Every structure is written in structure tokens, then in C-alpha cells.
Length: 146
Image (cartoon, rainbow, N blue to C red):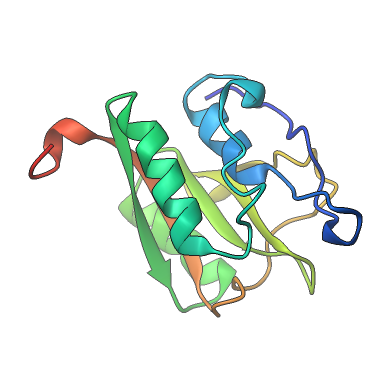
């Protein structure tokens, strides 16, 4: 895992869509964010399209991802991750206060890296859909039909 900073902050009023998602993927792949497409740039409010674009790009690299939704507090989620996914890097998505959705790198029940450089703060609430998510990159070789 390489701790890269996101290249674009989130300010949709000024037509700037943050790239924390692609930066987290780049961090996990030890790849600078400029080498990862900005999946959310033109579809930040369409989760299905972002998922499709992300999975298409990852597939070219022999990867996919599994996203697990949770309806619990952030502290409960971190405790779950510590107990169930030790030593496994993952992306945690949620919100900071009343701000936009945000993604960070988690490890062993802690927020390991914030691609915003700490400007957005620690996640403390669910996404717009009232869930927190944990995302794991996985090799496509283990997927049926891959």
C-alpha cells in the first residue's frame, strides 16, 4: 500500500468531483492516482455506473472488488474489521459530518490513510444510502466465469 494523495478535491458547485475512490484503488495497487481512471468524474451520483467502470478497468488488471455494506456505527465497523479482516487492506466508504461521501484506506480496525491528506477528516457516518461499506480488491481468478 502506497499512501498517495488525491489529485482532485470534491466541490461539485465548482464542477470539481473528488477522486478519493480512484486514489484509494491506486494506493492499494501501489499505483499513482493519475494512472487510475477518475471513475466518478462524470458519474459521481450514479453508483451503478461507477461500479461498472471500476470493475471494467480492474478486470484488465486481473482484479475485481467485493463491497460489503454495513448498517452500524463507524466504531462498530472498525471493530468488525479488526476482528474479521486482520492484516488485510481495504477501502472504507462513508461520510465526514454532513459532507460528501468519502473513501479511506483501513487496516486492522483503524483508518490507515486518508487520501485527502486529512482535509476531509475521519469518517463518522454512513454514505448517502445510509450504509457504510468495506471494499476488498480480489483477483478475478477466484470469480465464477472469469
